[in-house]
Image (cartoon, rainbow over all chains, first blue to last red; front, side, top):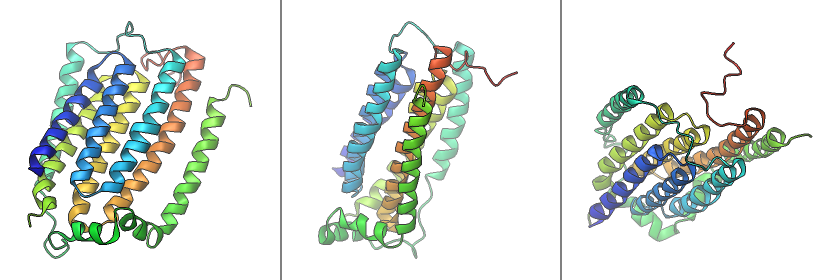
Amino acid sequence: MVAVIFWIFSAIAVASALLCVTRRNPVASALWLVLTMFSLAGMFVLLEAHFIAAMQVLVYAGAIMVLFLFVIMLLNVGRADTNDLPGWMGHVLMLAIGGVLAIELWAMTRIVPADDIRLPAGTMQQLNEQQGAVQVIAEPLFREYLVPFEITSVLLLAAVVGAVVLAKRRL
Amino acid sequence: MIDQGTVLLGPALIVSALLFSIGVAGVLLRRNAIIMFMCIELMLNAVNLSFIALAQQLGHEGQVFVFFVMAVAAAEAAVGLAIIIAVYRHKQTVDLNKINLLSG
């Protein structure tokens, strides 16, 4: 049952990703990418990552994609009259390179973690039930990964300053 | 009890590989700067999926790293879109074939 739902979500994700890449209109592309992110959030729920699924909807589908749509509207490039899709040579080249990469990655999906580092079956469900979806993330985030967390806050500050400096016409 | 993580690990990695390849193909195919940028976000999402699929079996650290990837993606989107706006102001286009300031 879970596997069936997972395959439905992944079919939606892959189909809308393909549509996102092939649409001429940037607004249509952005909206298909939002659908991809929503179905990825569904897959995260099935993989016992409830908090990350909520963050996926809030941060990616909410904040980042709204920023994209905002820029598309601001620059007025949403018209479909400018075609940037290449001719058949470009398509063949792109399909060849993407296909080779897909085959390479496909070979890597055979990897199974070694038994001695793998957690016993059902550990994640148990932890989620005992501690709740937020605490299981918060515990490692604020203990072992406190320094990377603080560095991330500095990175975000630098990004805010950089975005304002770059986009402002005259400081 | 059936362990979902073991059942879904293979499918999740395959979907992740497909999404990453679609993202790479999009970056190679398109010349619109904004759509290329969206393809990069697609690749980041594909990597997030494989992090979470493996976190099922190896502990919650994988989910913590997805958190960091999201923060970096947000910072990258803000700065990248600011660069696109600055370039558009100079050249009145986001078509990368027409933006060749650095090529002699």
